[in-house]
Image 1 (cartoon, helix red, strand yellow):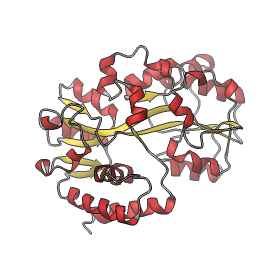
Image 2 (image 1 turned 90 degrees about the vertical axis):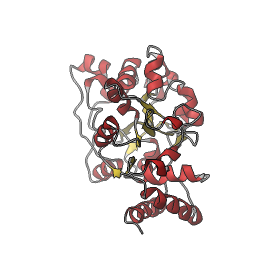
Image 3 (image 1 turned 180 degrees about the vertical axis):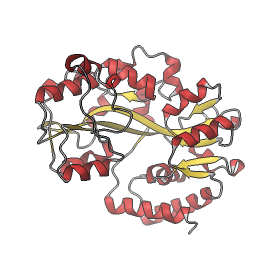
Length: 325
């Protein structure tokens, strides 16, 4: 059970070579939906959550630890990905990272040249009144509230107190006046950037290549306040119906450098296997903000779990801001 876009043979070439095809896929739109489905009795063999959900998924009691000795590429993982909270204990590996990525600002360098270059990159462009009506932000807590918290300089955007929430809400209300839209369809942002109707927006690296292929001068930022990062990976159901050997074959195939090269080149995402980066041209990595992948682990802001009642507060605040309250 995975996200749309990963249900493809290129993500697991060694598995396809051995079994003659891909496993059966079920797609979920977001992780809470997937967990709810599994709690109701749906039992895939392997599922694909992200780091901020691992603890919640483990506490469901539906999953089991993996045997490290059967994970062929474990030694080649980025060390930082081995230390994701709740991902391992004395029983083994509960969450085996596969892809990791970033969320940042994609903008037109010809239309906002003062923000070009790493020394000038800043999330503040999404609040700049000079570009009123030509800015976009992702319509989600992670896309709107967390970004505003970074700009506000909140110490921990994932655990704000009431005073910090009030500070961030005030900033978001100012931002609302200059936004073109809170968006949910990334293709609308890509089209807007291509025409110049949008100058800057929250975005993901897979939007860079198609725009550059059209000759559009865009830059994917490494904001001075911190680029947002996340890691997603594989968890195995305790009562999985499929054979154990095939499960490990699938995981090992997805961890191979061949899978990683596809992930980097096609989706602009990082791969958990360090060897996947060896044959990727520096220009390709630079375009998606990974010219120096190791620095993203130290300078990036890793998405963290947000306690349920606090996430509700964040969500309610976003609704109130969008409503102009």
